[in-house]
Amino acid sequence: MALQSITGAMPAMSIQQPEVKTQRTPFEAQQNFSAMLNNAIHQVDQTQKVSDTMTTKLVKGEDVDLHNVMISAQKASVALNATVEMRNKVVEAYQEIIRMPV
Image (cartoon, rainbow, N blue to C red):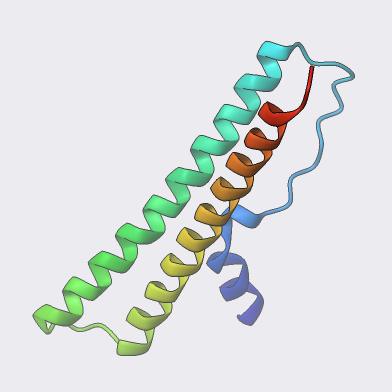
């Protein structure tokens, strides 16, 4: 049960096996990266929506456990913070590339 809870907490962090394909075109690589990024952002959004729904249910007095609400809020917070940190690293790397002399 504990392992299932841990894997459910970080769906965007799942390990994917590399594809066997020997060489990709730049367009294929771009599409693959775009799909991966879109999927990760969608998962963070879903985590936020689940947290908002559970919080709303708690405020309305519906039958929801407080600890489950707090856990979902923390999952959403961690996912959002990780996404923001990844964005910051990408922007920092882009700025470093731009500053490189040609």
